[in-house]
Length: 345
Length: 225
Image (spheres, each protein chain N blue to C red):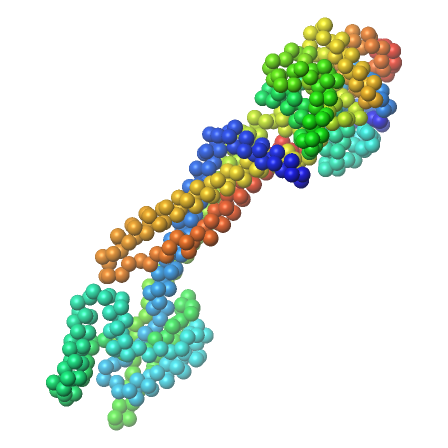
């Protein structure tokens, strides 16, 4: 295409947008609404994803160890779990041992203002200082630590919890681990009710919610895209109808289809790109100044931990390109379809 | 050259608009196409510009075989033709200059070429002084002249004028016809579709008469009986 023709088409496209200003505005509004909904659904799904990853123990089976077990018995259970880990295709990570003290520290990090946790840690610190200054012997204190109610545990992390059969098999194997008492008699090392903690059920529910959101998001995307297509199509159709004599004349002069089509496609592209820019700006505002504030104020008081929401810059590229793609698709497709019947040779 | 060989054209509902027409128009000829309303004159011109497609027979226009033409070649065919419509089909929001330039613009002509050719053809039709006027400010005859300038500006081989005097006053008819003769003298083939037998007799050119989609006479010298 010659540069002069290219610029002529661009000018004609802009003229078309302003000539049908009411319908152009309607198209932009519908497209913007559609894009913001799509963008918000994407952000919500991603936020759920990020937060699940942060919680990080939804896909973990934790085997809690009885406080009466000695180091040897703990190691024995570890060996048995290691054997189970090796046989399961859905456990890829190494078996992790978390001591009772480490559990306490983890809780402290998660709930820094919790009085009960802080009380235990403070007493512990006090005892340590007495022990170090010689005021409290090891025998007198019984231990450097005050009695920590938490138990040590082993953690098995699954890569895929949707394989429920395999998860059940692993759990039953854990349930069968035996230890021997002093008389050599075997007993169950793990009580399936009290010692095995997992979030399999919760994980399943969460996954269902997430999948529902995905499906709903895709449906909403499709529905709004169709609505947007119809509105833009009507805008372009009005333009085409108003210029039907021009189009007929162009055809009879020997204008090619692409020459006739181009100004209308440019018109659609302008509407699409402009809508994408507006939607991007609004999405930024909604996310950065509204959604984050609402979520922050709603979750601030809940157990000391809020929902993690990243900065908008993390979404900027995906949303920007996504909006642009939706805008261009809607613009080009709707103008092409609107013109079809006027372009018969 | 335009050559119809046993050309027939039927609409989808089965109505035969053109029936077994055989006709040859040589390059540079001036031909009147006459007949009553609904006789098939307009369909014949539509066939020539591939606005309608041939049902049977062979049709050749300016080197294009229209009975077997691919749709992508039609724009090239139409660039060899200039069509003047009875209702002028001028664009009211464009000036006279822009109306003529538009015909060049839509076939991708360069702005520099447009700037040279448009004033030249406005001069040919005697409307240089009206270049900046809008169609609503022109008389019927002037509008028709703009339509002629627009038909000529892409340098077509053939000019088809559909009832060119139908919408102008009687005293302007002669001017329009003089313009058509001038165009013919430029070497263009001119086909005038009309039912105004007065002008047909006055100009004593070749006359092809159509009735019910058939050619019933083809004579020169203004004789149309």
